Amino acid sequence: MSAVSAFPSFSQPRMSAKTSGVVACIDCTDRNAWIYPHALALASTLDVPVTLLQVLDRDASPDARPDPIECNLRRREAMRVLDRCAATIEPSSSQTTIELAEGPAAEEICRYVRECDEGMVVLGRRGRKEAGRDGVGGTVHKVLSQAPGPVLLVPVEAPVPGSAYRRIVVPLDGSRWAESVLPLAVRLAKAADAELLLVHVVPTPEMIQARPLETEDETLRENLIERNEQAARSYLDRTRSNLSAMGLRARAIVIRGGDVRDTLCALVDREAADLAVMSARGHGHQHVRDVPYGTVASYLMAHCSVPMLVLPSASRKAQMTSPAASQSVRLPTAIQV
Image 1: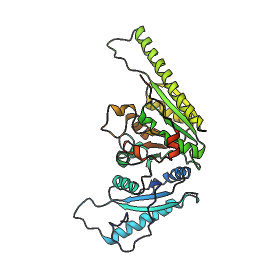
Image 2: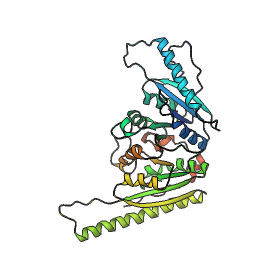
Image 3: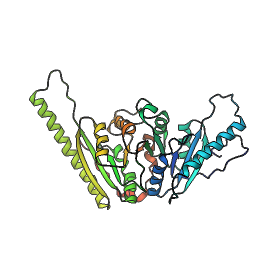
Image 4: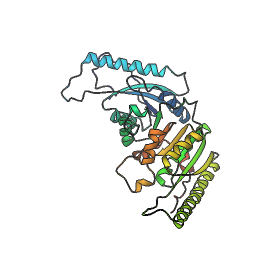
């Protein structure tokens, strides 16, 4: 059934056949058309097509009968928005099609992606004043909770990319969950000859303070930080060696930080990265399983200055990776503490 079949059928606009690949979600005003160049960069790198998708709201009342003339006008205007968005970019090697759907935005986006062989979703992120309390809108939250595949979240301030992303930050905390993004990051880096920055932030451990810390307490904390720093460096060096053996350019970065979230955001800016790839969950997943993403991912989704390619909790089986890449990456053992 067509994605817009719920609308009255007269004067149907042209519709494309569904294709898998990168699905860029454009709103009804095309104010988030800035995501299209990023969708093209991702699609060009992965050699997959792009679909511009717009979801039209449905009247929430079960007794409401749609006005066929109004529905047709809305559909035509939506098609003009999508055509205008597609026309803003010079022709590229990636095929672009346009699609309409009707219903709740997050549900329709995820349903469409599942029917398109579980591709990638591209969403825009506005400034904090235009979104929820954490800087991310409700649709983004819902998509990340339900998406069957990776989600690229593009902040409005992100610079327009070239033909591909060239410097990719991959935060790793030693967990298998965090490591699950490596095949995807490897595929992107291989296709674009991009540099992978493998990053681990060593946080300052908390210590219960019934009174001011004594010298031995400070020494204990510093010894623990140095121990974790050494373990993290060994862990990332093994991962970097495995990637280098595959012909990839990779760097291992171990950095201390009181707040892991702020430290990662600052590192992205300092290293002039143009993409971050990370799992929605990390070490905390083994303790808290009833939320779709952890505190670090949630913070970066709202504050990171570059696009974030997030692998949601529900998408571990839906990674768009080639069999060769998946089999070639030898995932390291998590840090034992």
